[in-house]
Length: 429
Image (cartoon, rainbow, N blue to C red):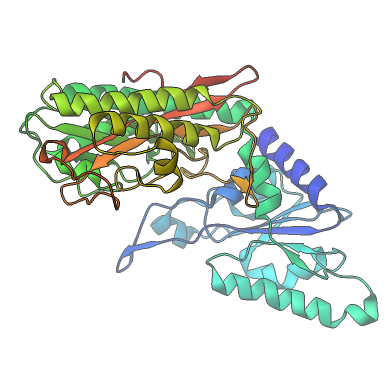
């Protein structure tokens, strides 16, 4: 993969011209007191370097005569490594990660100016690390103070996201293979969960089985907190308590995905715990399934991103009118969003290093991103008839027989040259 990371850096440096781009590693996060969560690298940093340690900074300076790619890292310190794990160190950072030069992170303030003074701008995303934001701003202000005497230096700070995230949006063949692996492991876990789930078992038991397979098959673990929602819990979009005992004659919604080498799967399936749908469950399930199938059919190169959502909404509204949960003119219902008490979210998102991955969805008010080969997105319509949901103004009262039913069906879809490929097709629906 080092050749892949190097190619990404070259592509980014070609885009920034005479600028200097700076990327900060993710901070460590405290779980409680002095215990930390497992470290997870910042996605942009990892995309460009493959480097998986905290307290690091990557600098890309295409204009520098010798050092175009520089890493600042934690030095080797045996006493600290005994407690918190091995470090690559300064010398190995050059050997293993292809840096032209590497320094201890403590030398950042001393060394960084030489990579900024001849740049015409600094590319840096002002993120949640306020202390490091201040570090970058301080260096920029010092260089600008000397600009009248030198006539050179970065006259602006530009966000890296619009430049880098367009690259991340189109997956390379190597990335697609990692996403296939994440999807395959996720699919295996879902298929086993469907067999394992039975009335009387608890949601957390199903969660344990799913996440056991993620790790057993070489994944890093869950891509996000697993949702195992039985009965009316399925009407809570991000339900993660997973502590209820499952009952016969109710549905189980599982939204879970595996993270494999930083790339993520994201699958949702909904099925009857006891093996058989009630009439109302099957009716709503068939509506959601048809909405998903028609939305997936719109995943074609050149189509606007939003076409899948618009297609799904129309199918859902038509179905809800047919069963009496909505009433009136379909165009008016869609325009006035009278369906939103039952379907309140979008029909998908980009997928990759982040579960809700980097990339623009829309340009201005009217122009949606056009799908192109290498895009990977989820398609996930749903219907949620909560126990206490109220219909939109002017819409029919909700018969109790529908209440407590929540359904979502989600797949990961790759845009190909000729159409699309459902990466998660191995899970029945």
